Picture (cartoon, helix red, strand yellow):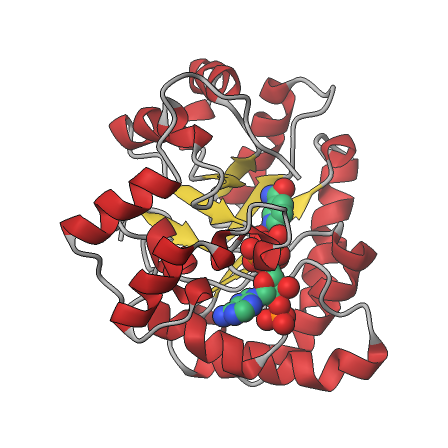
Amino acid sequence: MVQLLDKARFPIGMGTWHMGDSPAKWKQEIEALRYGLEHGIEVIDTAEMYGEGNAECLIGEAIQGINREDILLISKFYPNHAAEPDLGHALKQSLKRLGTDYLDMYLLHWRGSIPLQQTISDLEKYVEQGIIRSWGVSNFDMADIQEMWKLEGGKHGAANQVLYNIASRGIEYDLLPLQRSRSLPTIAYSPIAQGDTRGDAVTENPVVQEIAERHGATVFQIMLAWTIRQGDVVSIPQSSNVKHIQENIEAASISFSEEDIRLLDQVFPAPIRKMPLDII
Ligand SMILES: NC(=O)c1ccc[n+]([C@@H]2O[C@H](COP(=O)([O-])OP(=O)(O)OC[C@H]3O[C@@H](n4cnc5c(N)ncnc54)[C@H](OP(=O)(O)O)[C@@H]3O)[C@@H](O)[C@H]2O)c1
């Protein structure tokens, strides 16, 4: 695995958007996260935004009793918290909810109006103090990444988290190659297109269905495996369901033949021109 998460040996993590919001689902969601951690998943992705802290509280409970060094915790801060003193306050609150004294990675959730240099300089202080092991960004397109790299400390950015799935391949045209060329890791969010509810009907596509059948996999597993097919993307599907987490773990073992990839490219083609960064 690339330097994201130098330590990450497993390319699939767990997203947590919309988790922790329903008291009725709390126990099931704790079980789902714990199942993942006990079966090889290391990365958990969250944000102060998710349920305004509910997801972080859920994770805090789920990781109790698990060796902290075995988990790679990523959280994200709002753009309007992207400079001191708000940044430090947001970080402290996230740590408190998560019940930990450090984050493995802290991401700017999306770009706002606070100058990026200010954000980077403030984040670097927390890295020096060991309160965050690394920092990164999210929803940054080419121009943002290029600007970041020109700023003091900007090359320390440790990942860009962006939307990436088989029905949304725009980043393959320019952003992904750029990040690859400079070893900036990519974290793929919404890797299964939010359960394929985005209107792309990937799971209903006969080619995807046929490939799934050939691999003895579900269409969702095929979607997930596709995002990590090149070995240098970490994908963070969200699931509140133990069975789905189990399937997502198994998806890491699917390897596609050249023919599979060719067929998938035919029905969900790679971009041939610059596309605006897909964001949700
Ligand atoms: N940086 C950003 O701006 C940003 C934006 C969006 C998301 N994210 C992060 O990325 C994570 C993932 O993205 P996402 O939540 O938007 O969408 P996603 O992971 O593509 O899809 C989540 C949906 O897929 C279902 N699902 C998961 N595994 C499945 C399986 N094996 N079979 C069938 N259904 C399955 C889940 O339902 P069940 O619970 O029933 O399994 C859930 O409804 C988020 O949770 C969040 O951590 C970041």
